[in-house]
Image 1 (cartoon, chains in turn cyan, purple):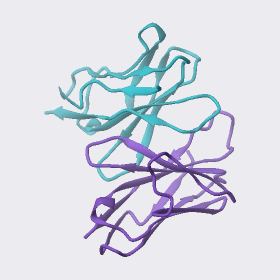
Image 2: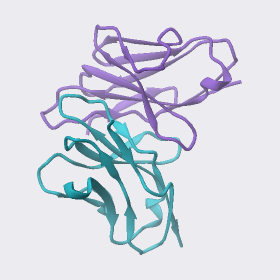
Image 3: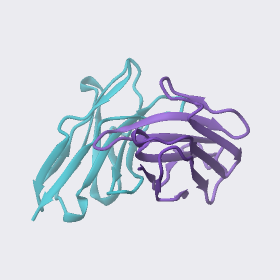
Image 4: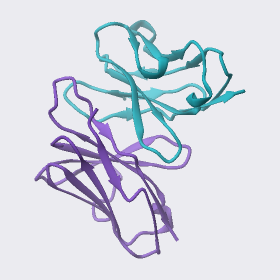
Length: 113
Length: 117
């Protein structure tokens, strides 16, 4: 069955430190991969997406993610955390031919001053 | 990017009443709309998919008679929670997709926080 796993429901980093949020997917066919950010009581904002072009994808707000087929991973990184990055982050997949998104359980990022 | 607007952002209703949530695509025609439900501290679960002018397709385990979805126009879909109960309290999010270009993904609304008392 297709699924998305996000390791770590909560991640805390110091302001200025590296952010690493992990995402692995389970599928026999490489899907399209996404990272979304959700601020409290708000909807989802697309950070970046992978669609089989470059394996390193750059998104908004300084985030980027690398697709590694051998590891079935799509981890999200940012070199230097900012206080405004504190939010919930969701990894998601969808498969060609459908616009149903399968979401991971989310990772809440906390940035410490 | 394209804008999807949900209304209301928050609603409190009494147990046994019905509540309607609207999802509008403001600057594009949404041929397909999706409704998700998010329980506290959990991920989004797809409830149903609706194509304009067609009946919605519900995911397994979602009661179609309780969660009525209407997608009567290319810019509006509604979700009506009928005979709401406290366990229906949740965050409901819609997303919409229309043909903008071949690389267009679905856009998400800002969500509606439903509290049933």
